[in-house]
Figure 1 (cartoon, rainbow, N blue to C red):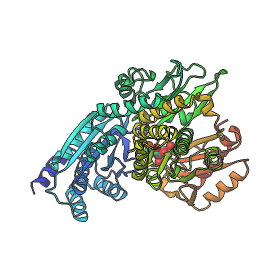
Figure 2: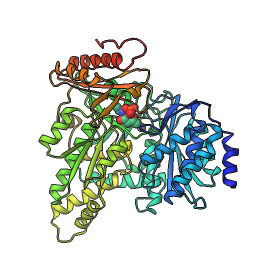
Figure 3: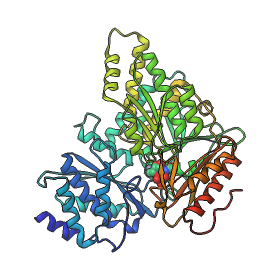
Figure 4: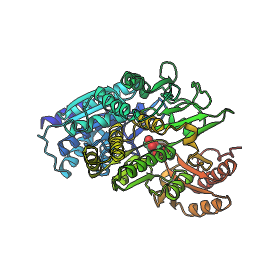
Length: 545
Ligand code: NG1
Ligand code: ZN
């Protein structure tokens, strides 16, 4: 067939380095940009097949999120804006690793297995982040699409969640919104402005927020959006990419893991600040108190704020909808206790990676999901949205119920339900704080985080670590979990677990305990156990103090 001849011809221009093996990981392929040209071309091919199979538009986003500038990556977006399904992640890995001469056979195997009608039209939306390598790599994706005769639309520079949004808008024939960046700003900002009308006496100071753009795409997009906010939110942008390096000493991942402010940011005491990551799908908040001490409000605090707000509105509206919060093992123990014991909301634990959280959140009328690192959103079931709408339009409902329903409606509209979105989350958080007349200090004091520490350990093959119980326990290598259990017992309020990263070649260690010294010591001791029992490489992990 002519299509396959074209694939053969084009793939020669995007050759695979022989022997290179890469996995579709927690969030797509991710590694040094120099190794990715063939992967991009092949993901263009796969996105086209996925589009033919689903008879819908598929997305391909070129980004390596919070990884260093030298890295890049690609992830595929399914028709409703979700992450591509696990079976197709498997195909992605197969296609990516087929040697040059086996590519056509690998492609045909997928076509056959999925019984894909190759005369079906295909449409792929492509987006990229601000990495210099993204320019040629996104072209390679477009080449892959055209080699299989698919139609593509290149959105150019967009945040990851913006691309997810476009895909969903397109496949819902505009029901979810208009599939343009302008349409995205309009929908979110209009909802934000409606929400803030419910805030009384908001001063200019309270409307101010400092944003660390991680020197990435989020900074560009916040600038683009600003005029739509009609001065209801005043943003001071730092690390906007004009001088600094992407994700270097800044961005949500740096702030969360290092538990300190990004460089290049001016922090006045008590003022709200937030950081995006490199592709603007994560957000964390923080502030410095009058003594200059830094306080972090991570994804767990965000989930708590949002779920409290929603629960209050549901009560006011008299709507009987089940609300749950989905977290991962990285959620701070205090947040889980607070949500379950004080807030009385259902809490579920899912494996790391938003696709797992997203899936779990779909089980509820309203599913609030956040990773501790600030990646998350809220999902409303169709039935929930309908009930909210009915009440908002019910002329017999009393004023309080109606007001709550309208607030819920605008909340639904300000949220990007397709995936975690730093811009959308920021607008929602700002609206909630304004409506509740809450300062960042008050939000922070809802519960007190247990001191915690995250470390990385290099091992020769991280696959020797296998986990169970949503990654909270290791089943291999032998003896590791027992060692962790023994160490944890030494510390008051201790908790620790280890898992192989899905985005970096490391094993991650998490520990929390009553004091920072204990959390640091526990994390270090567990790192040593990993190093000794799971084939550590390089020097032994050193104590933090
Ligand atoms: P890995 O490298 O698998 O831990 C990291 C984050 C995930 C998720 C992905 C994708 C942590 C501990 N892990 O995954 O939560 O966000 O990157 O970006 O934050
Ligand atoms: Zn990201």
